[in-house]
Length: 420
Image (cartoon, rainbow, N blue to C red; front, side, top):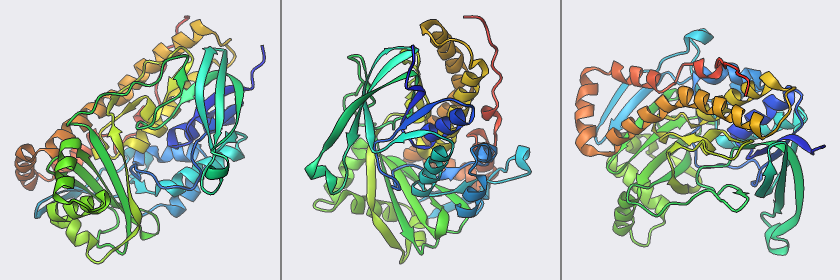
C-alpha cells in the first residue's frame, strides 16, 4: 500500500529538523510539520556544545553556523549574591580541541529549516498535526493549517488535510500538548509548587564577556547568561512555581518579565554588573511548566526525539545538544535497515533498540542536571557549594565535562541488531 511519506516529523526545532535532514539525505521521503512561522525567538538555551560540531557539519550547515555563532565558549562560571567563580570549559578532544558556541534560536532554527528544504524535505508551515490514527506502515495524520498575524481574525484555521506515513517522529516542545494518538493525548499533570517556569530575554550592549557561560544560583530557581551572535546577550532562568508566586506578590501590578528581571538583578551582582545600562531587545518570553524527565513510551512506529523523548533541567545548557544527538541516534538506527518492511513487529523492535540506546546516551545527563539544579536553587546547598568551588574551581570544569559539554560519543552509538 502506498503512503505519502516514509516519515512524518512533528516539529521543526533542532530535533525535528535534524532528523528530517538526515533522513532526506539518506533518500527517505520526509514531511516536516511546524506550527510556528520562522524566524522566531523562543524560551530555550542557545549553547551548542563542542561535541555537536561534527554533527552540524554532517547536517551541511557547518560553515554558516561558524560564521554566525558567537565567540567560542571557553569559560564557565558560578554566580550568586556577590560572588563569581570562574573556570575553564572543556574542549572537545575528538575535534582538535574545539569549543562550543552560542547561536540565537531564531537564526539556528531558520538555518536548519532552510537546509531541510534544500535536501528535499516537504515542509508544512504553519500547520499542526491534530491527531494520528492507524498503525506502523500506514499512519493517517490529521493536519490542520494554523493562521498567524493578520490572517488569524479572517481565517483562524485553514483547511484540514490527511497525509499517510509509514513512521512518525514526534519532536514537539515539552510545554506543548502533542497530537492525539487515537483517543490518548499527552498527559497533563496537576499544578505543583516545584513546577518550573522558564523565562528568557535578549539584551544589547551588556558587560558580559564573550565566551563566558555563567550559571546563576537563585533562591527557588537557577539561570544562565551567554553572548551569542551579533553580540546579543541572552539571559534565561527557571523559577519554581512557589518562588514565582512570592515574586509576583512582591511586585504587584508589574509585568512578570519585569519582576523576574528585577529579581535577577537583586539576587546576583554578576547579572547586575552585566546588564548595567544594557537595552533589552523585545519583551521577556515565558513558558511552562517544564517537565524534566524521560518520556519514551509511545505507540509502535511513533518515536520521540528532543524534549518529546526526555528533558533535562536547563541548568546544564544541553537542550539543543540532546535534541540534535537524539535525532542522529534514531536516524542512524532507522537507516541501518532501510529495506526491511515496516510493520508493527518491526516498529516495536526498533523502539526497544532506540529506547535502550537513548537511555544509555542521555539518562546520566538527566540525573546530573537534576542534581546540579537542586544545588543551585536551594540556598542551603548553594552556599556550601560556593565555598567548595572557591577552593577547587576546577570542579566546574569537571562538572561541565560530566554534563556532556565536550563529548561527541553519544552521536556515534553502536547498535546490536537482532531478528525481531
